[in-house]
Structures are given as C-alpha cells and as structure tokens.
Length: 287
Length: 343
Image 1 (cartoon, each protein chain N blue to C red):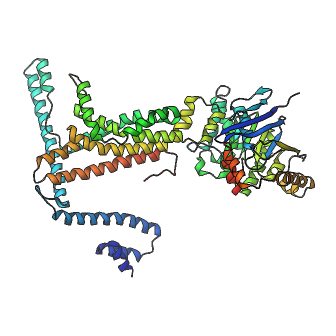
Image 2 (image 1 turned 120 degrees about the vertical axis):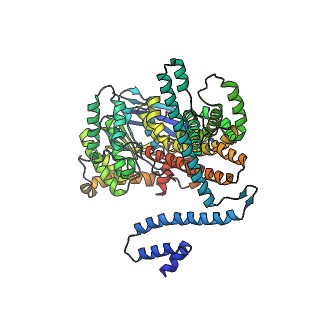
Image 3 (image 1 turned 180 degrees about the vertical axis):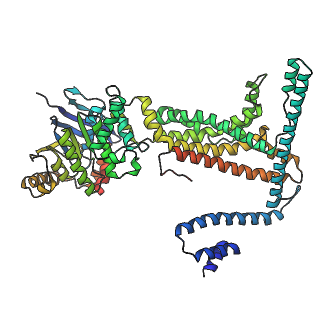
C-alpha cells in the first residue's frame, strides 16, 4: 500500500566551486490525499529544495518523488506552486494572470466560456472578485498573494505546493491569509505542502509538521501529528493546552535540539553555497 | 521681502516680479504655484539664453560676416519659409500649365502616346528647406525601422541563448563604437556596386544614408533587448515551467512583455543616435536632407549662410527632441513598468 505522494529517500548534491555540497540527505516523507503538511526548519536547511524537487523544478540526485505511483521528473500543473513573492506577471491584470494558467491547463477540456467562469470562480474563492481589472502594482501584497493562490488553485493541482506563501506579509495580513487558506482548505480538501518559518502558522494549519534538521545534509528530524479538531479557531486555540503543547514541541525542536549553528562564519559559507534558497532565507533571518 | 526674493529668482525681469507678487497676494495652492513655476522657469531660461547668444554673437567676426544672432536667425527662418511657399506656388503653376497643355493636346486629337508623354513630366525645382526636413525624417525612419527589425530578433535570441550571446558579444562590442563616418565610404562603394537597376526604387544617396543609420542604430537595441530578455525574472520562468508553456507561448506571453521596457529603452537610444548619424551621413553622401542643406550652405558661403545653418541646427535639435518625445510616449503606452526611467 503506497501513499498518495511519496517523497522517497531524496538526496540532492549541488556542485560548487568548493566541491560538491550535499543539501538533502535521504529526506523521506509520505503524504496522504487531502493532508496538509508543513515543512519547518532553520534557514538554509533545504526546505525550499524539497519543495522544488516535488515541483520538478530541481532534480533529486538520489531517490525520487512518486505522485500516485508515477515518478515526477519535470514541472507540471498537477503540482501547482504558490511562490513566496507571488510571481504574478506585472503586465497582466489580476484576471489575466489567472486566466493565463486556466487557458494553458484547460485549453482542450473546457470551452472559452467555461474557462472564463472558472477563472472568476477561483478569484471569488480568494475574495478578489472586486479587483479583476487591476494590475499587480495596484494591489497590496496580501492581495497579490491571494491572486497567486487563486492561480495555483485554478490549475486543479493534485498537490498544492506553497513556498513560504505569507512570509513577505505583515503579521495582520498574514493572519487574514491563514484564515482564508483554512476556509478554502475546508471546502476543497487539497493536498498541501507548505514551507513556513512561523511556528504558530505551522500548528494552526497543518495535519502534520515535518521538522527538518540543519543543513548541509539535512534530514527529516521529527514529524509531529497535529490532532486538533477542524475547523480551527485561532482565538479558542490560544488557550488550548493541546495547541500549546504542539507549539512547544516545535519550538523545542527548533531551539533546543537543533539550534542554528552558532559559528556564523561556517554557517554563512554554507548558506552562500546553497544555491536554491540561500539568499531569500538569509533575508528572512535578518528580519 | 517677497519682491526681493522674486527678483533674485527672476534675474531682474520686472514683469515677472509683478506677476509673482500679484499672484502671491492671492490664496492659491502649492499645486498652482508649482505649475506657474514650471511654466515660468523654462521661459526665463530661454530668454537668458537668447540674451547671451545675442551678445556673444556680436563678438564673433567670421569671413562670412558676423556670427548670426537670434534676430538674423529669425529673419532667415522667415526667408526659408518664404522660399518654400514660392517654390510650392511655382510647382502648382507648373502643373496647372501642364494640365492645360494636356487638354489642348486632347482637343487637337494628338496620339495617346504623345499625351502620356506630356502628362509624365515632373516638376523638377530644387528641394526647399521644408522638403529637406521631410527627406531627413523619411531617411532616418527607414534606417531606424530596418535596424529595429534586425536588432530586436537578434537581441531576443541573444537573451535566450547564452551560447549565441557568447558568439555575438565580441562582434557587437567591436562594431558598437564605430563612427558612422567610417562606415559611409564602405556603404557607398557597396551600394554603388550592388544596387544596379535601370529603374531604381530608391536613390543611391538615400540608401547610403539610410544604411549608415541602420548600422549605427543596431547596437543599442540589440544590447538592451538582450539585457531585457536575459533579465526575465526566474520566478516568472518557473511559473511558465509549472504551466508547461510551449516555447513560443513562453516567448510571446512571458519573455517579450517582460523585456518590453528594456527594448524601448534601446529603441529610444537608437533613434537618438540615428538622428545624429543621419546629419553626418547626409552631408557626405549628398542625400537631399538637412545634412546636405548644412553642407550646401557652408559651401555656398553667402552672408546669410551662417544664419541659415543656425536655423538648420535649431530645427535638427527640435526634431530630435520631438522624435525622442514620440518614442517616450510610445514607451509609456506599451510599458508595464511604472518605475522605468521616463525622462
């Protein structure tokens, strides 16, 4: 009996000027259909690399990814990605950004009118119907990320991959977005893998939290089952002992057992070598 | 206080002082103040320039008389316009006479060949200054258009294919700094050897100038298009990979729109260079445009020549400015990047 998505003993090594750098070492995660998984770990541990391998944007050196028992080798709309910096085309309107994806994915299976309706439906889902004709420049960061999510959802992916989707947002907007995402998740029951730095976000949203050890040669350190009733309400949970227990577990993992290495010189050198995520994670660290 | 401030600002132009004082006694918003300032400052600057020019010109004596001041240039502007109107009148009169002759020939029952021969006669008066302006615009337009049609595709391929870029880069860097005057003799010889036709569609002098303009217009467009295409955000390319966009769709929907601001920067630079190159090319290739006008006036050496050349200088500058503004407006209309430099 194999799982829906099987990240099977994935290792990846990047060639660098100072010799090969082993970023992931035997990362093994099984995901069931409809599950919400968070990947959490310190900066530079290779979380984004895992996501990029699942997306097919990077190729694993060893091991591989199986989706419904088929190997994943290249990117495709069945594994839609929500990028951290939204990645909307600045010259297209909100509607056209989503429509571009809809047209590409459903050009043979849906008529023009159906594609139009589907585009509008997905933007409705993220509460962006009021801004169809605006350009990305003209809307806020939270709204851009909503459009990015709508675009990913519109591809009807088997797995939705989110790379720190709310990392660039202020904390109030982030709260709104998390609530929206839970609401959408309750309706659609997607299979989601989300990368996050935020412990509360991980506990609030996930069914399981995958905690990764520090790189290089990062592995899956622990997997935490979050057994909280859905729908989850952040206010009620704030006082909930179970919630606080889960939260403490993650914090202990990150800050007791796997503290970010204290030697900044070597950590910095490693981060520089980490081609896939060194820079953006470095920026997050400072903030 | 406000008066002394204003006069310091306006270099003793009493009417401006009075205007500003009058305005400042009213309540008016900073916006209006700013727009008045925006209107007044350039006018003042131009007046100062004209004053300095006028004074400076009187100090310079040449073998063709005194260097022309603003007044002499204005007189020659009117004279050139007058010559143009006179030439137009002469041309109209010529065709009127021709029509009459044709009518007479028909009435006299001449053979159709003979009538056709009369009809085919063209007015062959000398090109006026205004005609020369249009010749120049036409030539630079043709050269620029051909250059753009060549440069944009090359730039796109360079930007998308690192190997092709490595191959092209030394060639681009080598030819980019070459002056048009170095190209012109080669172009002239090649055109006169290759473009042999009994019924030429274009004058050789036109081709020489236009091709020289093309050769100089290519490089900024190629380089900027390359930079624009190569600089497409990696995230956007990842989106296109996730969507599995075919190569052509990716190019049209993602790469090109994202490079448009840079392409237009290149086109603007090219057109600016092309306009400068054209004048030099026309001087030497005797294409009947503004460059030839300047050269002819210089060779002519009458007492009005310098003033007439000065008219051409101002017209060249003004048209260059208009061409640049036109490109800028086009760039603004098609560009999505609000932050692009639009000056």
